[in-house]
Image (tube, rainbow, N blue to C red):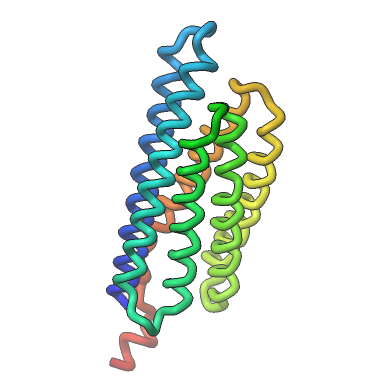
Length: 194
């Protein structure tokens, strides 16, 4: 159980790091790129960063599958699906003939939907932890709304899509950071039983 938790923390840690780098790139570009070149430079850099991130995470998720035992078929299936979707997203962004932030928003939307569904699924299993259950349910709903917003973002101008992508990355970063640093505190009943 602790070994599998370590694997989940490893993948979450990688995702938190990559999201932090993405946010840093957006903040840097926002302060250093002139208005006339903003869309072209921002679109190209964001496209490269996002496709690289999706490709890297897809490889990490796919490799993580081999570390789970056969008893963990649910984790194996979920990580394989996430890995395939991430790699497909990276390839789509890399091969697509037009580079636009609107395309990046559309490609990022399924990731937000899947993350939201995962949070809602985890929340269902936390009957004995009402605060964490409520927090995950709220965060899961926010991620689903974020997925819809990213799909809607395909109709916005590039500057607004960049802001939406930045807000989405910040929101997901904060959620993943809290999950990453969550520590299970053993209750006194379990300690007395030992």
